[in-house]
Length: 352
Image (cartoon, rainbow, N blue to C red; front, side):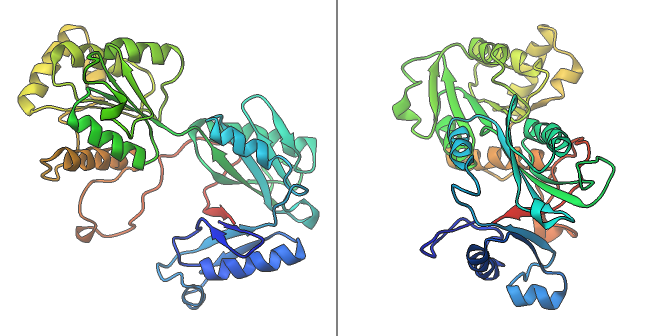
């Protein structure tokens, strides 16, 4: 959330729950120049006072940003625009108040800025790259000088990894609807089909790229170029064995991919599995295939089917069960799958 010099606001930190209180804090910090960590919702009474009616606790780090305090901001913005991974590590807690607000900009092979010591910089840079590799942001805890087993310094690492990719194979009406859903969810969407008469940018305005190529060749080329990772979603909508079997053979053998789904009836799925077994795919590889693709929403139109597929992707990403929340008890939001990050611990934190 940004509060501009003219008082205007862009962004949000809580979906509206604590924005008023944060705005006031931001105004004060702009005047004093002293960054601070605010905690809202410590008690039920405090939660209601700031509008945190959903319950829980939220930590907000409020800092004044300018060319003087954050000279690397322009370069960070350029990295994000150019889909270059970058992380910003900011000290939000420390026994020495002079450390609070210091930051380190971390890229795959370089750093800029400093937290206060070479030891702290080295430890945080190493952990930040681990978070950047999996696209996660976290609060990490160290000793005052970056000691991994100590306490006293808290560092918020905000990771700006490239947007995940969605590869849609099959230039059909369902693909156009899915491309729109994918773009809406923040994916960089590529639609690929070997038939040039169907694979045109005009038919897929929401797609970042429309590629005329045999799907399996395009996917293999992308994998060799290192453009496929754990966040990549692959949706095969071709309905034609000569297209979908070769591309699924490539997709299911990739070591790291977030989701592989294929459209078709249960009869089509059974036939497809037999064809994939015939080309040598193992049970373990076949178990990674989601087919028929999507959740059971009763979808019929291309747009409804696209929502069904998108819902399945979201559920698998966050571990959701796809059931109505009204029928369930417990927490509404799921945690992301755990990733090992040395020196870190789970926390909720947002920079304002």
